[in-house]
Amino acid sequence: MLPSSISKLCSAAARSSSTAAFFSSGASNPRGRRGQERRQHQEQRYGGDKTNGGGRGGRWARYGKSATTGTTTVLALSWMTTIKDVLGIEKVQLDTDPLKEKVKQSWLYRKRRQYDDAIQVLQLALEEAEERKEELPITRVYDEMANTYYEKLNFDEADKYFRIVIQRLVALHGKKDFDPEFIGVSLKLADILAHKGDLESAESGFKHCVRRQMRVMEEHMKKFSVAHGALVEDRHTVDTYGAVYTDPIALFGMTLEAYANFLINYCEENRLAEAEEYMDEVMKIYGASSGHTINMLNNFGATLVLKNRFELAKKYLAIGVDRILYVNECAHMLPGYYCNYAEALFHTGQKEEAVEYARKAVQMSRSGDERLRKYTQQFLKDLEKDLNKGKPKSWWFF
Image (cartoon, rainbow, N blue to C red; front, top):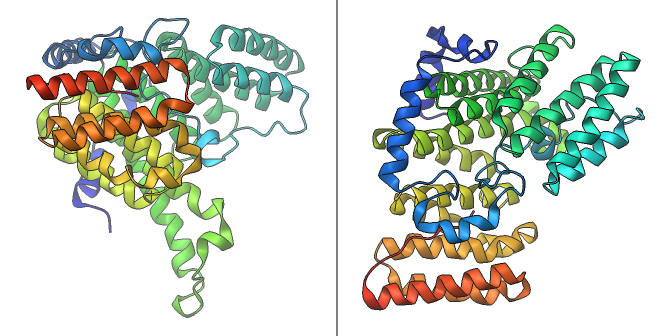
């Protein structure tokens, strides 16, 4: 059974008509000005800096900067990856289409953060698809274009292209607002609205996604739990059906994760317990040992550290601090994860243990690149200095 707060959220959203504003043409919302002022207040309160991810950790925040914009990519590769990347859902099948190579090439450029190159290839692909009047490939190219601008942090262009994708999904491809393609794009549009300061519309968007996907999941679970009667129910549903069974559940977890991150990043202290409840539910959905879970814990913990919510950061980082050793795909994350955990420990009074994890981070970074080695060494040096002086300094690593 889902927590009562999630059920209340969904029932309240069902009674509200404000969610429709989230899917409008993108005109500026006058309420966004108040949201922008509130966000600026939060940045001043927590020492945030738009260019480096926070005044106190600016030296290392540069490690994650976009080469084209000079700003720090924070959670763009956590819950905000494409549905295809995380769940294996193909939004548009291109396996037999010659445009596939161009789309694949642009995707590789995007993963390497060569965004301008990706956009150039996509523009050529779009021209070719439009000349042939093939609607499915056109939609896919628009989606790749939107995701490229999104990861580049060009939110105006990303917003424009994501709205084109939404319109095409509905008008040309018969998609509804509860289909996974629609939900995936909607989560990103909500995040863009939050970045622009329109927090009320952003929250309406996140609530809409949670409500819709919860309904989908409930209907989905009924099919597998009672379709054949209790006496013949399949006890190995995941093995039998694979992604057909797990994808709707995982997407529901993604909507909760996205909403929890929004609450932490943009809302006041009184929403903290709500965000915690959603993340606890996400953990039940994903399990504690998957690569996505470890990445999620690291990013969420780092966000909490940035917001000075160290006890809660310690809670989530502690869940994965041992499990990460057994997840091969997360091996590269070990030094950063240990530094984040050390930071949370230090600010919650466990200073000796914090130094031990900082030392482990230095050891783990020896096989990494030079920047990582220098960072962990400096992190340990500063932590030991703070321990001796009793003057804590905050660092974080995304």
